[in-house]
Amino acid sequence: MPRYALSFRGDPLPTPERRLPDGWSLELELSGIEAVLDALERGAIGESEARRIARTPAFREMIRHRRDLGYVPEPLIDEEGLARCLVGAASSDPLDRIWARLHPGNFFDLADLAMHRTAYRRLIQELRDRAGDVGALVLDPVERHAPVGTVFRDRLSLAVGWGIAGWATTATGGINIEHFKDCYEELLRTLRHETFHRFQLRVCPRDPAADPASFEGITSGGGDASNDQALYRGLAYVMLEGSATFIAGDRDPAWADDVAPGIGILQRIAAEEEDKTVDALLNEGLRSNGPFYGLGAVLSARIVDAGGPRALGESLREGAPAFALRAIAAPGACLDLDPSTRSRIERLGALR
Image (cartoon, rainbow, N blue to C red; front, side, top):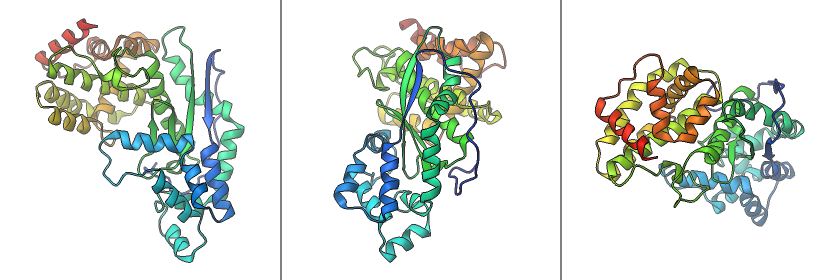
């Protein structure tokens, strides 16, 4: 599938294979995207209404995620900018209509919705009518890999957003629907990935001084030495993104291509003293599904192959160094990790 689905395919939404256990549920937040479609179908929207839509929870969190990433180039979208794009996408002015037809990415991807309103309305209605099935399809692999006795309730939000397909904040997981349309295979894969990030917030150990709803608490640790703290952050991001990638869908042979580059970045982080350089290395590992995703997915697969599905959830509960050490100790091909870095990881694991 291309990174951005250009047309609707007519794919059917699958039927779940099983019901979720008691205590597991997923709510779909569709009101924001439905308000956009309502405005587009009327053919006009005032500035005050556009701002109201831009302030709905799904769009507010979409904007928040984009701004918090830290590496998206400016200018960054804000409430005012999104409102202007809504006004333009709904406009009947001939120049605005031409602009909307020229490219689906115009008006921050809202041009795509303006040109295919009926198809999007049909898709959103299908998701609303079968919200329970969507929740079961998304949560099934999460529950299978969770520690025994875990329960999880959460929310997923649908928005629109240029350049980023899926996202998660401290409030919700979400997707920008235009990237997928009715390609349910890829849509569900991304929903699982982002929902698993929300699950990680519930089970991973964290710095007690950090915001309990923040991923920063999970990536903070490593004692007093700055390079140990940096290595801990790197391991945490490998664990967070890699386990979510593993959960999202079938195993991908291409993950193996990320192992050597990902380990190389970790080892460079372990040797680095400067915060700015560490941040650049972390971005290298993460940006555009960088090597940390595939490396962490391979580590997750090793944990599951050695200990069964629920071992993955248990490793998350133990923290990032323990996650890495479980995978390193698992049977299989040797991971080319230098002895010094491995010793550092073992020391970090002993701090928990």
